[in-house]
Image (tube, rainbow, N blue to C red; front, side, top):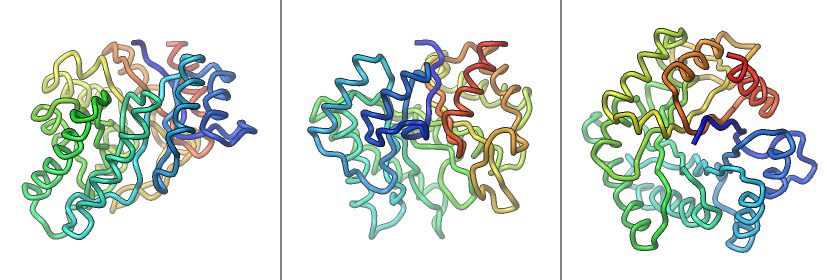
Length: 272
């Protein structure tokens, strides 16, 4: 696997707004990957998923899934529903061979970080049990989050990845930048990649799943995603760090202009 570039959802240029149509447009744009967005719920049926599988295989486009936003494994009332939403994402994503299932795991609320960690781990274990029972091979990717109120610091996700098989972080560099109002230089990006390598080994860098976009933020963290050239995010320095560390995997662009910035990232990376 080399470093693949793609979009978070169907490209704007796609006249066919179906997932299969989006995959075809990704190929026409000479991009490599698409993250299927189940953020409002898993509404794709098995027949449609098989169609997506056939198109993505024929065009050699790598697919991943972003599970619904309505997940909070730290909520007693929403715990079972949250597990089900991840399981549903795995079940349908498994049909079209999604390499990764990305999700925002929890909010801290008034719980201690230790308790939230254990509840998140318990929920992920249930999903892993489902995957084992049904022979589904994918990687669960809890995402680094953009607000201090959200579970999803890189250290937490790396610890989960050490303790559980088939779990690795989705590293959203824009979220990390917004959360701490730093991590926006070549040296700081290298610091993140060094942490991953130290805790997960070389495999941690050889199979990364990343989100990149511009970002607006304040004292409470993330406010909104922006186009790269309309933000302060130093994407060229990030791409230099990824190249120097020989990172492989999938880089998904979440900028509002989607494929425009995805192509910018790909072309910039290839020019370095």
